Amino acid sequence: MTAAADQPGRGWSVGLDIGGTKISAVLVDADAMPRSALRVPTRRGVEGVVDSAAEATERLCAAAGLTPADLDVVGAGVPGMVDSTTGAVSHAVNLGIDGVPVALGDLLGNRMGRRPVWVENDLNVAALGAAQVLRLTGDLAFLALGTGVAAGLILDGRLRRGHLGIAGEVGHIPYVADGARCACGQHGCLELYASGSALDAAWPSRWGRPAPAELFEAAEAGDAAAVRVRDEYADAVAAGVRTLVLTCDVAHVVLGGGVAEVGAPLQAAVVAALRRQAVGSAFLTSLRIADRLLLAPRGSQLAPLGAALSARMAHTDPSTVKVAS
Image: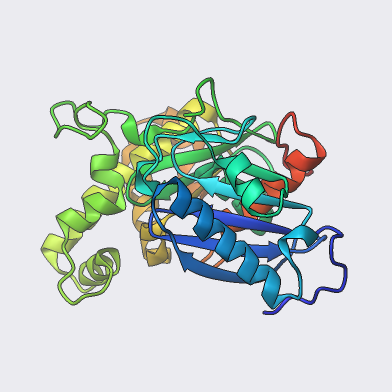
């Protein structure tokens, strides 16, 4: 849909989800409604990321009869460790940004005509977007099943970043005691079993379609090997969901990321795993963990929308980002 620049400079914002291969961007109006969206390829390295983000912003604005100068604020969700108070990013290896902190917020702001830019972890903004789109209240975790596994958390109505900004890194909780070595240096980490990358390795695509879709279709058709891989994968995802509930007692766990594009069959498999795992435990049964599981809607642009929302909130109250009640 095309936005109409009927009130330039009055509440317009742009949200960016900056990933390793693409940037998803949305233009958001004064009522926090997405008005238009686009994607551009991500160019790696600090200069490449800044240029790609600026291109996405400028193209969105131009299509709506705006310029970046008409925007109130720009929000950017990025992977890696993010200091949201300074806009500094480090360890965003998929973007070509290593362990040395980069003042990405300042660089983006200067590139976009000195617009205020709020930088936040990509999973945190996805959690905000999920709360908005699904109209959820109460504590929430957005569990992303992509290249890795991690969660964004909203607790007591606020983003929970943690002491070093790594709250929700459940993918690096050991899952198999004598498992393979993880890139983080530990062994048997959950993301080696519950990520999209793990699923791609366990069930390589045979017909050029996404491996998760092929796997779940083969399992539904009764392929015994596919059923085994699907159920083992669902068990690992269920362990991540259970961990989030047991540590944070979130009311909702929203499954997102590339694997979540499978949709209802994924949710059904994880629900079945959660119920299997609760058999024999009155405690787990009483928590009704399976009933807390939701799916991110397809094509809902949760992360870029959440990036815009976090920027608007921070622009109003720079001390924190609080979910509107």
